[in-house]
Image (cartoon, rainbow, N blue to C red):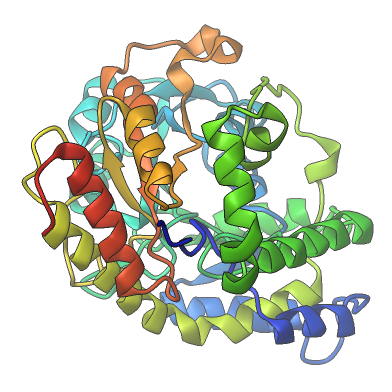
Length: 418
């Protein structure tokens, strides 16, 4: 008999957080002790940045940052293994995306591939610290300084990771964070831009100051979705109902339910910045974020410990690629990414064995038809997009659940239990 697992994802929401959101939902900015101002000041102190600007979403932060640092018509080199909307924000900002292939082990953009693409039309490099694994920032900083290029960090998945005291998002000219539902700080929607130069911060602030506050109806739908997700993935409900429903749907190819857990089924190009993105963060969201800053380090420690268990249990299995392990904080392991040639067979085996894991929803954007104008051969990105699976590391997941995942994977490979 199989025991139902904990859910593959859990939000970082809390009952008090929902109450706080409802209590302050209609709060307006500009009051004494403005939560937005307090958030930005606290972020500067936490991350060691001269400037922090609250965003309604991380993708809006990417759009405004690219507009501030890249001249219209100039190139920005970036990873193809990302959300299609990251590429859309670059296009909407008037820049030209240039795809540089990734390193398979880290799934991060490869500095050697980036340097080979630099020419006189390149204005910036954007690195993505994927799954909480920081890129080789010493290489990228030296490279960008040598070629006089702006360095932008997409730190949406790496909040709290750091190297020698410098945080992801604070190495370059600007860094963008996400505070979405499944990130380690959750404000339902939300993000932030860190900026090094006064001029960059001023450009971004001037533009976002013209945006209205986040639409209350849209935000409330997101809050309700968060509450429904928290309820459905609560261990008692998930183990008695939700898991079995989606397990049955997956094993029996019931598309109506399977598509509920997929993202970006039909990516499309956006050439103009969508009006629905033109928003500012609400003060109630800022209140939630500030309250969660103190959790960054404790949660980081738990995710690193989860990665340690996976590393010890999965290292050396032929045919399985795992990420590098470091316990010094440089990798925050928002998830633990593994790669296998026949990903579908592994996931089916694990679900049959009573486990709950996820396919990484990112795509190789260099192969998407909607971005055919900028197509480039990126074989590592293509392979990774078809082989990567995410193992849970969230703070309440627990060592026993991790060991059961490890046992199921080792059983698939026929190498016995660790």
